[in-house]
Image (cartoon, rainbow, N blue to C red; front, side, top):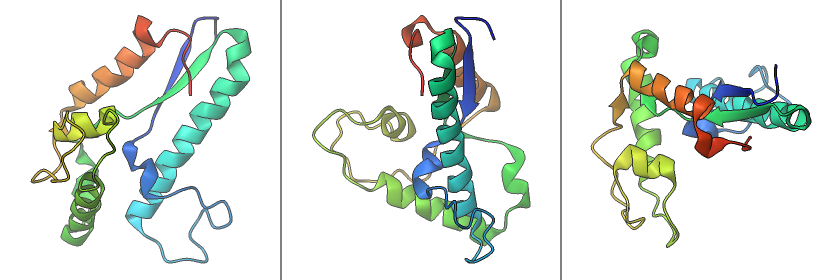
Length: 152
C-alpha cells in the first residue's frame, strides 16, 4: 500500500451487542446466539481496523472501520421469524436509551432521525438503507478529505 492509502473495514454499531470473547470465540463453552456472534464479529472488525491503523500509520497508510447503516441485504433469507424478532428487540432496546446532553452519536441520529439528543422513543423499526447507499458510506470513508489523517 502506498502512503495516503486507506483500508476500509466494514463494521457496525452492532459491535456493542457483544465484545469478542477470546476465551470462547467459537461458542464451545456457551450457548450459541446468532446476534452475539454477529456483535462479536463486528467488534473483531473494529479491533482489526484499529490494530491495522496502529501498524501502518507510520508508513502513511490509515485504516478505518465504518458503520454503513442497516443495509437491506439477503442476509435475512436464512433467518427464522424468532431470530428477526430478536434483532428488532435488540435495536429497539438500544435506541430507547436516552442520550446525554452532549451531541447525539452520528449513528443514533442517522438511524433514528433524532437530532436533539433527548428522544428516548424508538422508531417503529430500523430504517434500512439500500445496498448502493451502504456502499456509498465506504466509498466516502475511502475518499473523503474530511478523514485525511484519521484512522481507527
